Image 1 (tube, helix red, strand yellow):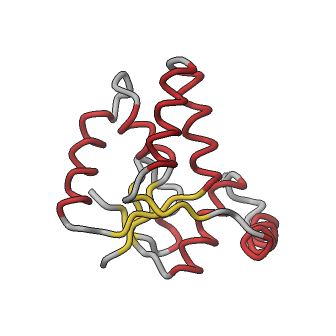
Image 2: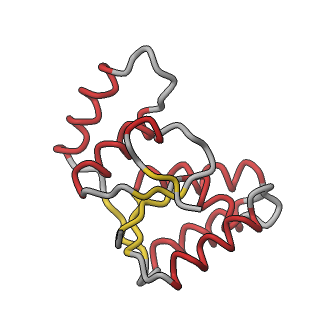
Image 3: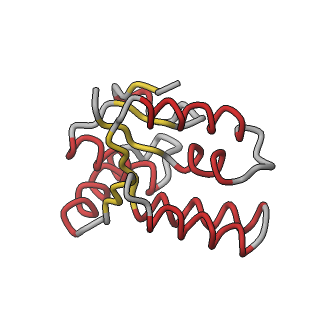
Length: 135
């Protein structure tokens, strides 16, 4: 276990001090760094993160979070390219009876592509795919 994917809830909890998961997110993030895990996220996750922070806090907080993520030497940002997008679209249609967002399905595609099994998230949406929630 040397890779971890951080989902929107993890980032929002970490950056938004008013978020109910802030303290837990801070502790988990310290643990991730202490264990020297390779951190991955996606451009779609950053999109969701800054949008949620803006709506629950303000534009400055969202911009600060976005800049912190995009300037970080620790975070590998995976851009959803045509390959990932097409896999995501196929899977999105396949899971039409599930309550997964397109971004959730893109995360599944990326994690499978990069063989990442550990996920930092506060919801259980993606646990059904064999991913292990990091706590």
